[in-house]
Length: 84
Image (tube, rainbow, N blue to C red):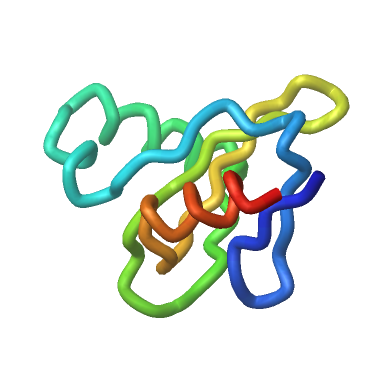
């Protein structure tokens, strides 16, 4: 199954690790460090150039983490996931 993140970007749900609200989790210095490290490693994919609302952590076939930043709210992504 696939989860649509916006702007013609989809991820396979079998590779999905978690979906996080950016506003609530970015307060933590650990989350900031995680996102900064992923950005430095070139593993961040910005799906939208609008105000980001959430980020998803996935991995690919080589078990490399990939972070997707999207303007879609966690609640909307959860609804899409459960509708499958």
